[in-house]
Length: 251
Ligand code: G3P
Ligand code: MG
Image (cartoon, rainbow, N blue to C red; front, top):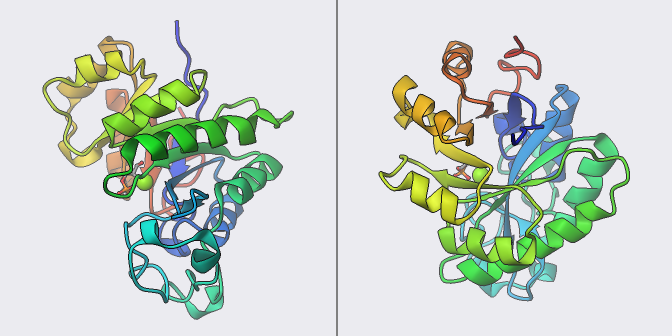
């Protein structure tokens, strides 16, 4: 019988909407609310450094412009990825996965590393993020919860399986497709991750009956979060880390 060691609540992009997403300030904010699990998005710079960013381009969440896949990490690290959220986060950089791993390990935070390849870089991003995650968390003597790899990209998760076969995997969907069983089985997934908007009780039941755990994103309403847990969802990922606290969904 497989087990699910992860908490019921994960802070989306580190600190949800209370801090700049995918930054160390975001992770610190999540931890400051007592959260014990964080989700974040990892991709490759032009020189193959694994760093945190959601979009393919940097303009929404920094003071820079252009495609991240064409920028070296030194250029990305010089950008201000904090001010767009609030002036008090001015100068906050896009961190490397190594910095994030160190913070998670020091703080005892469980991690959901979402592999978010830039267009056309699915397999190499999956391969490198998988290997880096395995290497960075392997050094952890305190961690008893392995980082959970996930991706919307089948090719990325397949490559991560090759480079980090021992790490747990979750395939991400917005709307769960008809062939979810075949896809998750082929990738040897521990979990299926889906938008809560397209989940219903019967679908949750079918997924759980197949032996998969479920992470639902992005749930910002406490009543909805409780309903999903009642149906059998194992972890919810939230932007409202203040409304849905770390213990809010405990039995
Ligand atoms: O991993 C759950 C969630 O983060 C997926 O959507 O777009 O916020 O990365 P997105
Ligand atoms: Mg994500």
